[in-house]
Image (cartoon, rainbow, N blue to C red; front, side, top):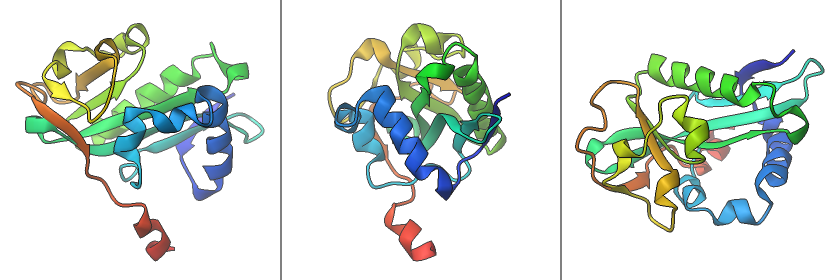
Length: 175
């Protein structure tokens, strides 16, 4: 039995270990998407963990506030990771469905990501929606995808994607 819940501060160490195993400790920090997220906190209420029956973290997904060029406010998804021993059980898909529903409920209009096109296509993501948007670094265009939570949110979107969310330093002030 797996439960999806909002991420807590106590999840930090387990989440970091999971991401290091899934993407490589050094490699994951070199990605263009990581540059956009760097120094920022996830979008308010949009960081999730999947935990097993014993309370162990087995999956993570976060959404980040960005400006998607001329489209304005959007979310950047990532990373999505599931413990290798738990893959193939639908945990990643459950995290995706939960995060997308919650983002829509909170009034967000679009989500973009860099990821495996065949995997994300089943949730409605498409490269067509972000064809004229650009990331601030190297990216395989076939892996740059978007979805509209509100129809038309990415119509005519062009320009640079940039981070715009809450700064991480605010976490220390609030603590």
